[in-house]
Image (cartoon, rainbow, N blue to C red; front, side, top):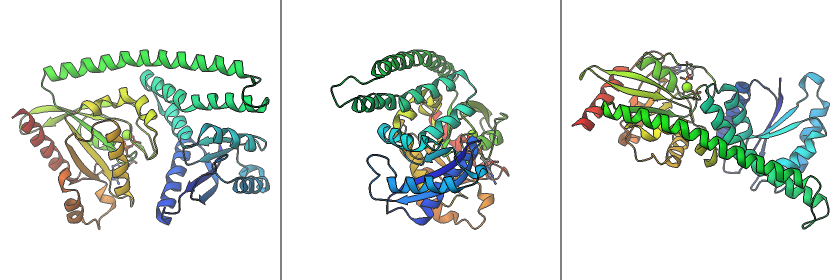
Length: 370
Ligand SMILES: Nc1nc2c(ncn2[C@@H]2O[C@H](COP(=O)(O)OP(=O)(O)OP(=O)(O)O)[C@@H](O)[C@H]2O)c(=O)[nH]1
Ligand SMILES: [Mg+2]
């Protein structure tokens, strides 16, 4: 069991509510991974520390405090809720390993969760690719660090040859994975071709992790996909058949990996083959957990990622889910605010609003045929 110290470095314009939500999301990620949180620290500063990201005084303080803790509460992992530069991770690691503490950044944690939840060969390959892209620069950075320690720039460092070998190995592995993933791309492209031949319309569920996408897929189709109150419960793509009662036709509804804030574009790119259903869909259903007080900022995170994927112009319906958890919701105000995204209110859990949603989807499919 990983006993974890969480540190979030935030800028001064982050509100108290936002900073608490950020930490609670990180805590949920740690729980999803199977770790426990022993200490939580928020540091407000204009600019992260160049060498260690968190100020070195702060890190010493945290480590001292940790040493005072009894054995059962003494941490062996420190997670920074930000994306660190390779040299910052290296320097922090140097300080923390003395106390038997490993250091991860936010992306490290997300990758570990992905790795734990991934089932298919395809998603395992994508995770490996993302990990190489995320960790690779650390190894290159380590080369520089060792060179410096061996006497300054220009001197060949101890271990430098090993680093060169490692770099070459990683580059080859990256190439090999990309070739393997191409095979999955081809298989999927073929599926899509078949569907187009049959004139099947495709609708893709997108949204922040834990918004209720898989629950909605299960409620609308006969697929029994895994649903859990966990972040990143879904890592593969599932396609189910959605029956359209008026026209007696079917459309295909797909559910895939959820999004989260601060995902570097490189990581998103590594998951392109899983996300290809989204890229190719006729219509996107953006599922929003309306019981979450920060749902508006999460909508923006999702829109940014859709932008990254180049699908921001696709037709979209905003599906405000979990209305059962928010009975006082002012639907009129939300409808007006998001009126260009055909807002609709549902509870996937209680199967409320699903008929209206299906009708909306059907009307959209008909408009495409017409
Ligand atoms: N009360 C309530 N809970 C819901 C509703 N829809 C989903 N949930 C719950 O929300 C949690 C997350 O649901 P999922 O369907 O796994 O969410 P997801 O968007 O697929 O999440 P990831 O796959 O992790 O990205 C589960 O505990 C669901 O039971 C709803 O309409 N009302
Ligand atoms: Mg899911």
